[in-house]
Image (cartoon, rainbow, N blue to C red; front, side, top):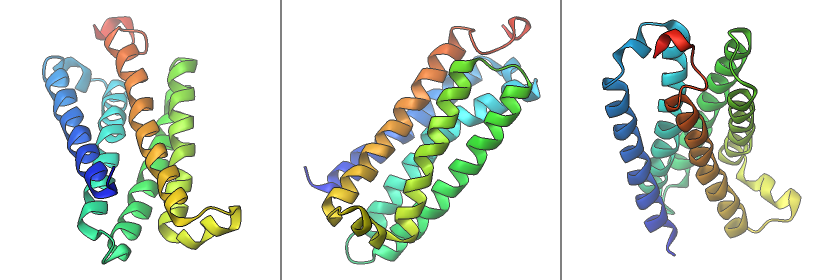
Length: 167
């Protein structure tokens, strides 16, 4: 598959997930009244939005101007890592489930190599990866970020990671 086609499909899919999530949230406006629930709802939103933006910027930069997508990848991954770590820390203090905490911690961990690859793509050579292999690893990490977003969505929708009085 052509990498630019992958980025186009991936980005469109992630933006669709953002829209679907906001349709769900519109049906549960009470989730936005509680600050803890609002943070979880926002975290789910970011788990779909940030990869969508990464895919979009990868298309904009392309192979002709890799600085655009590398810089955007780095910035968006840092935002994802920091916001996910903050959400994880607050969630543990507020009694989030171990599953949600683990999913968030793994997502934060996945953001780190994406940020590093954006900042210093030549580091892929340190671990003996060819550029095409490094890009494949990044694409897999992006897909895994979206997959990690689905687990908490399902559990949250099923009422497992939110207080009983929020239903």
